[in-house]
Every structure is written in structure tokens, then in C-alpha cells.
Length: 331
Ligand code: GYE
Image (cartoon, rainbow, N blue to C red):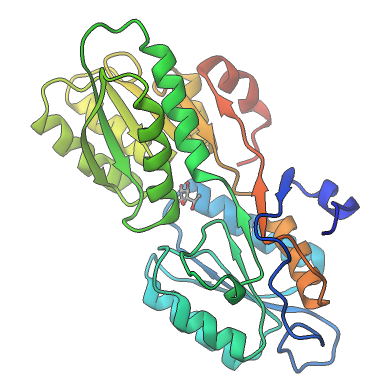
């Protein structure tokens, strides 16, 4: 196992490294990549989920800037939230014989075939931001991203603490991310486990809002129509929470007061809403994965062993903490 070296520490996002599966899946002994070019430059094919949220925009910027800084040639594709587009992009990258493929899988399932094709072509794959549920861990080299279960758990634990003196039922509505996505599945799980500590806390409605503002607004409108008493909103990201604010205000309720709002991400607009008291709590999820991703690409390309799981380090914010952090927030 390798210990962290200087470039890791220099990365924009601090990372804690967990080696969960013993020795990293070994590629072949030579270059570890399928590139045929001999200009010495690493070519990375990257398939991005889409541009659905402020988080995603910041993530894309981070990846593009880090590729330039690292001297890596980046081929970038926006899949517009469709798995079929991601599979198509990955197949193109295989055909083009890029050195490394990296992608953020829009959903967890259904990747084995295309990942096997990349493996057969001897092109290493790095998962970034979201993971896949493939049983065969040799299909990718590593997964760089957040612990989404933990984010949901931190959100739930904060709520449990806030409502510890509640004597009656606390009605919670939940805006989920896109169906089948790792952060949607995992944040739901973590939050659900945490609030189980207090039987008064009940999720009375839970629907996907696709991680978008429009989705958050639309689903919140339905929630408000169907439920007289909503005490808490848990939105799986800031953007859905921001969309929901409009629906809540339009329904004549005061966000952050009549309805307690908890979100995940901590992008600038979310942090502003928190500082303004419209949101009440945010569990952070960092999108600044670019520098670490490029570092990993270089290592994997050089045939070096890398940890199979690299977890980003994150925090949480209350209104007071958001006010303090906002002036220096980069995204
Ligand atoms: O929380 C959300 C984005 O996968 C962690 O995707 C990412 C999530 C993020 O659309 O805003």
C-alpha cells in the first residue's frame, strides 16, 4: 500500500485514503493504458453526467482546469443525464484508444458490459464522484468521491438533535436525486438510518426531483398540495432545495421557519440561502475532484498501484457557519 505523497497533500481537496479491498486491481504489467500515441502526453476520455446542478458545474470546471494544469489532454462529453449517452461516449473513447477513461456514472447499475470492453482493450477506468454496483471490482482501478451515506447520516443526526424535545409527530418530505444514482440511494439510506433514532420523525413523502431546481420546485408543489402539515424538507442537493423555496413561498409559508430545510452540497447559492436563514443545515459534498483525478490518472497510466477507494473529506454548515464561510467560497 502506498502512503500519501506530496502531490496528494497539495490537492485542492483534502482526501482521506481508505484501502478497502486489499491490493488494487492489477492491470497488465506494461503501460497500464491502451494509448498508442508516443508523444508522452496522457489522453483522458471523461464522461460527465450532465449540467444538472451548481455542484456539477463546479465539478466540470475543476476537472477541465486540473487537466490543463496537469498537462493531460482531456476529451470531455456531457451525457445530459442519460446512461446510454455515457455508454456511447465510453465506447468512443475505447475506439480512440485513449490512455485513461474516467466517468461519473449517472446511475449505479448496468455498467459491466462496457467496463469489460474497456478492460479487454487494456484501458484503465477511474470512477469519479459516483460509483457503480459491479460485483467485479477489477473492472475499474479506483473510485474517487464522497461518502454519500455519511452525508445523509449527518443531515439526519442534526435533525434528531433539533427535534429532540418534539412531543408529537414531525412530518418530513424528501426530495431525492435522480432514480438509481448512488448519491440518491445512499443519502436516503443514511438519513433514514439516523432519524430512526426518534420515532416521532417520519418521512411522509419521498420523490425524485432529479437534482435540478425545476424538479425540486415541481415536486415540492405536489408535496404541499397533498400534505397539510410539512415540518421538514430534506433535499438531496442544494439545487432541489432552492427550487423548493419558490414553491414554499408561493404556498404562503416561510422557508427556514415554517419548514425546516436540510440539503446537501454547500454550493454558493445554497450557502447564501443558509446564511439568509431560508435553509437550516447543509451537509457538504465537495465537487473539487479534478486535481486528485489527474494525479490518479498519471499513477494508473504509469502502472502504479493506487488505493481502490479515495474518499473526499467534508464538513457540515449551520447558518452561522455559512455566514462565516461564504466570503471565501469558491463555487
Ligand atoms: O450532490 C448533486 C449533483 O453526484 C455528488 O450530483 C453528486 C451529486 C450532487 O447533481 O448536486
